[in-house]
Image 1 (cartoon, rainbow over the protein chains, first blue to last red):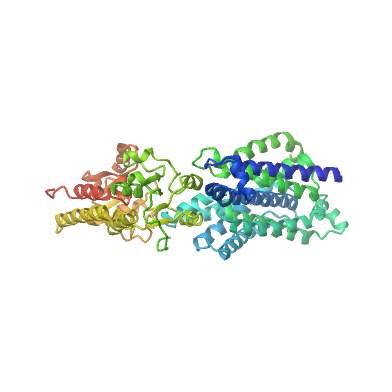
Image 2: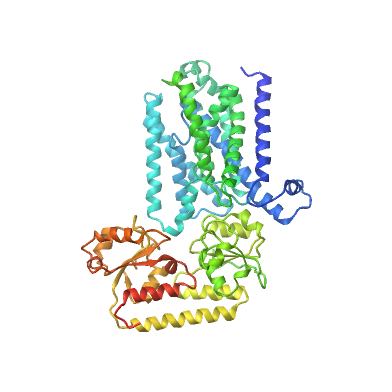
Length: 338
Length: 266
């Protein structure tokens, strides 16, 4: 059971962390802006034009994009983990992110770029790709309505490899000149201009997160096993379908605008579970905030580590995520999973 | 991205170049001092390497560019990404985009950059002399048999120039015929078998940077069946002279013509 104190500390703590990391991110970058210039811009006071353009035109939309993407990927991870009752599930491991990436690559080549309508269209095709991949994993792995861990992971790997190959097929048939953009996108990037992609992504993530959060209690009961959940009045099949679609939506809208970024949906939920436990009613909001914080942190590092060049943000998430995951595997899961 | 209308200041004084070819054009027009930022790949002329860097061609850093307060950015469809052009424009920087896809359009982009920088006279003179010398080369190779040329942009995987590329045009002007001139993609990944089947009489290997020439020549020595290999007609060429649509492509054209036609009294 969650006490009020826990809920307050969890959500409050993560909000403070997100604000602190975002504030630091606003002051860091290739342009040499002073702290007071950044503050002036944010408060709407008079500031040099360069500071205004850099802060409002480049850094702020990018931080927002990172925050929304981090939250979306993390909630997608929580949802897939609850759906499959498997702590190793996340959009990347299950191949769903590859499906979304495939959809987005097709969309980009079809010219979905630039306008607001195109941003929605790109999200839609990526969502469709994610849904197809998730459905494939589910159908391959399901044995009599259950999803055994080994078959689920194998199905995810196979689906992921298949869609990666499909992307490779496309890019090997496309002109080199059009390839540059797609290759950079495939490495994962939060570089953004203006607030349009953030807006579209935030809308999709709000719908997806809302749908997952609405099932938080049902997911708690499902964790006890489907039979017990049924006895407690949970329509297991309907809940699963909702979660399935919502998690695919979250993966699709995020991947459409950032490219595939690994590890966020895998490690953040685990770290948060260590802190606040696995009651989904608290886990979902706290994990969303923590995911946002983590990706803003990782992207800021990617922006400034080798400036004026930039690293793909996925490099940072993997360098942070892989060691942490190994630690979890060696300490926590050995007993739980084996 | 080209064909947009851009409002450009009458006489821009703080120019950012987003491609090595554009940096070379600006210097050739005697306006190098007006460049306030160049890419990490802008290595010619030597002075350009001392300019502040704004990132790569595919990966310009917008903050670095804004910090330089440019009143004009120069970009090219051959290398820069459309989203970056749109992005810079959205940030209030006028971006002029050139589209040099063959020899004639390279001259055109030199003239256009000249007009932007108020250097019409220099640009007309430069383009005029390039045009003249290209015509002289065309006359020299007229009536001479045109060898079949395989141009290797990259060896493994094999990447070749296709239809509508500057390289294919330069090969034709140098008195050769590219065996991949009809490929619909600009720079397709190509099958080595298919390249062999087209029996190239000359193989031209583009050199990128410091990579060993010998090593790459050796790789091709295995393909004894090819007339070009049997006759030892594999020629390395400095890629920067062939791939950068700027003033130095004339040097590339001249070098290529001499490689393809040693029998012509140059």
